[in-house]
Length: 96
Image (cartoon, rainbow, N blue to C red; front, side):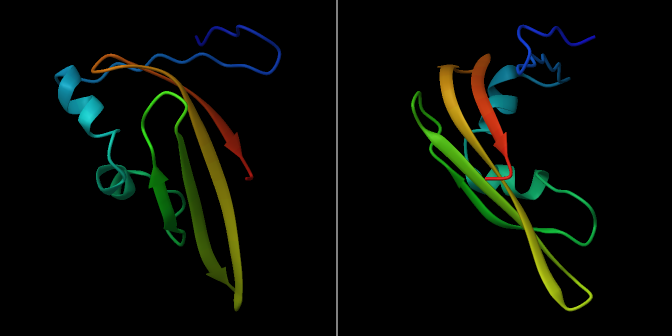
């Protein structure tokens, strides 16, 4: 169960069967995130930009073509706390 700290907030904890430094490294570089951030089969990750530092941001944009029309959706993240290799606190905003 995921605790709900506030009405518009969700806190999640994830556990990976890998050393913390390798998991963190997989999140700190756009070239390593890009192959792992995906959506439905017909969507592609068109934009993957990251500035992983406190106060930094990330921007992702997925795009697809359906029935001859281009559609896209985006997500932004703002990094609030960072303690490599075991803590990464950020806010995600979908639709941006």
